[in-house]
Image (cartoon, rainbow, N blue to C red; front, side):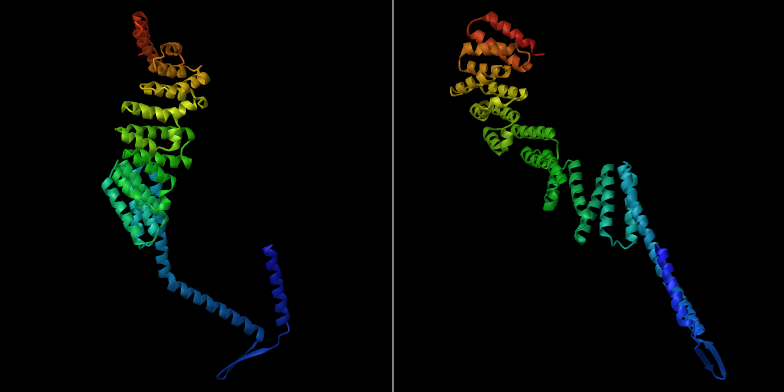
Amino acid sequence: MRLVVWLLLLAAAAVVAALTFGRNDGLVSIVSGGWRADLSLNLFLIVLLLVGALSLLVLQALIAVLRLPRRAAEWRALQRERAAQAALRESLAESFGARYARAHKAALRALTLHHDLGGIDREFAQLAHLMAAGSLHRLGDRARRDEHLHSLAELRRSGGATRADDGARLAAVEWALDDRDPERAATRLADLPPGVARRTQALRLRLRAAQLARQPLQALQTARLLAKHQAFSPEVARGLLRTLAGEAIDNAHDGQQLRQCWQQLDAADRRDPHVVARAVSRAVALGLHADARAWLRPHWESLADFGDTDARERLAQALVEAAPGLEADWLPLLEAALKRQGQHPQVQLAVGAAFAERQLWGKARQLLQPAAADTRLAPPLRRNAWLRLAALARDQGDAEAAAACDREAAALCG
């Protein structure tokens, strides 16, 4: 299509030239002293155009010669810039290939070339320093790594923000955590801009810092934010939250600390049977049986909602541990639980232990015997049932039955 357009334009130009110059019989006379030359107007115009074109070519050639030194300098600068970019890419590739010494050398070469160019690209310098520091961190050279971090901080203070600033800050936090220095990590986390601090990677680093500093409650709050951002799969998030809540509970060394910790837990944590069982165990260890039963009671009121065998087992074990001093107002609740979930050995064991605590020996034995013999129950719980049956037998003076129950309990110790 373009060729057709050019042909049409050329044909139009030929027609115009033929119409304009075909009948042009004008003359141009050039007189100089006693010399005279007569030229046709057409020839004069052609010569004039040729002279103009030749003059333009000569002028352009002269300008090109005069610009040659500057163009040579620009070409050399361009070659150095390409070499610097190639060195930075090489550093990145070597770093991903776990050749950290080579990556460090390539990053230093990129910095040298950038300095030769005048050092005007601050973001390039930041990236080169970041690659060099990362390589030195992998090599365990913390002193030289910190020198590059200091250079990054100076570059950040010397001009406006760049896209590399956030990466440098987050890398500094991660390296502090790798050095197992929670105080330095916390300081650098506090220096993060609000927008950066809300990113998933920043929250992951905050979680690691809290765990390293042994601050399970803060770690639990951060892990919950990560779970809301879907940073973990549901199963991993559930396990992590349970673990951190358990660590927070175990860190309580007296009753007041345990109560404060329980109040600071999220409502979802207080509804988790595994967390409740952990809190009950810790409360029983600190002698807070009443608090343990108060935390446990809502779960026994809604025991029918738990279809998970493991959850029922944890709640049953928690009630067995918290049974000493059981109040009489628990009996209707236990009767209702037995009516709804009485076919489960975990419920039989817990309710039987509670009845034994209230000295309802007959009811307790009717529930503990099938629970102790049920292989679906975990061996530690079955052993607990046999031991309670042995205690009941001794209270009634049946030494032979007590010895038999003790043998069954001993057989489950392995």
